[in-house]
Image (cartoon, rainbow, N blue to C red; front, side):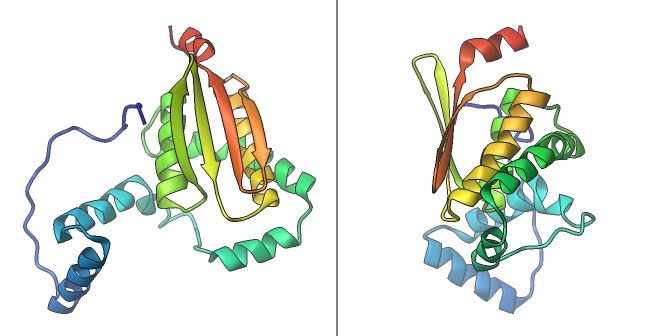
Length: 190
């Protein structure tokens, strides 16, 4: 995706560990089902823990199924969800980046968006593509227009209030796309 990962050091280390045979059997089956090695599977799980899940342990965080989330969304109005997203977006991403030891920036925002909220937390699937001096940040999800409104408010506040730029936004029932003029970002970092 073209951004620097805040934790990677491009070096690997070898670790030996003992695990229960039953757990090893599960890991082998899961790795085979996914078409990867057990080592790759464990690396994915450890990365998810290091980047995201370890911060949930003292936050009273919960995991909701998509069906439960949809049930909550159905009881809220679209404008209220966008306002709620905007309220949370003013502080939560900033605080959660700092909690991870990552200084808030556009690059950090892309990492947080794609890895922490996208890949690790299941808020959406994301893609970030550069074209013609602009970057398209696309977030697609199966949760409907109300979730799109929440995401629009959340990232609109984060980009506008914390990172001090306001990208164009396109809202759809199953996606939100931000168009970022890279000239604006490069001015901020010079």
